[in-house]
Length: 227
Ligand code: NI
Ligand code: MN
Image (cartoon, rainbow, N blue to C red; front, top):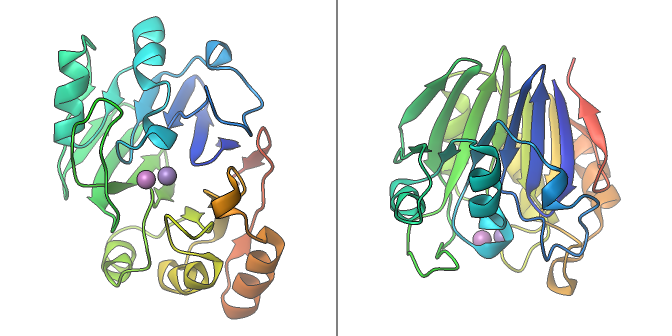
């Protein structure tokens, strides 16, 4: 499986003909290297409703017909906006697909969509074939990260916010990585805007000194292949 980083928290998980797009903030993303028109997702997943995650969801789903998975209040908004295939789990819920499954888990943050829908924010455990990707969404460091990752399947790849200000910073993120125990960590949600500028290489050095995890720093547009 390939993981293509698109800037901020947007990633595309590509496995054969399956292209799972998470948090597609492309239009208005100063770090984006593609336009939303160039993306052809087969599925869209949202961690929460903030614009820097919700992004181009409605336009992409309308153009491609990709089903969208989001926490139930956001899913209801998307249905009311006319999207036909919407999955609406709440925390603890697992939605199965022909390529695997997605479990919605808590995050410690806030969430309001650009249209004003208030909903609790989440993270996503995404099993694609035999590979488990944990997209933390936006969150501070909170101890349930241990519970989420220490029961159930081993996390192969974790997408961890490190920019601070709106989420955990790179120092708290090292502790999160100690708890998660992923084989690979990809830092996200940094350097997109001045308040969340940070040193991803210092984060990499700190995590690799403290844990067995390998940190893969991707520039927007770059791809990491999971073996
Ligand atoms: Ni947010
Ligand atoms: Mn955010």
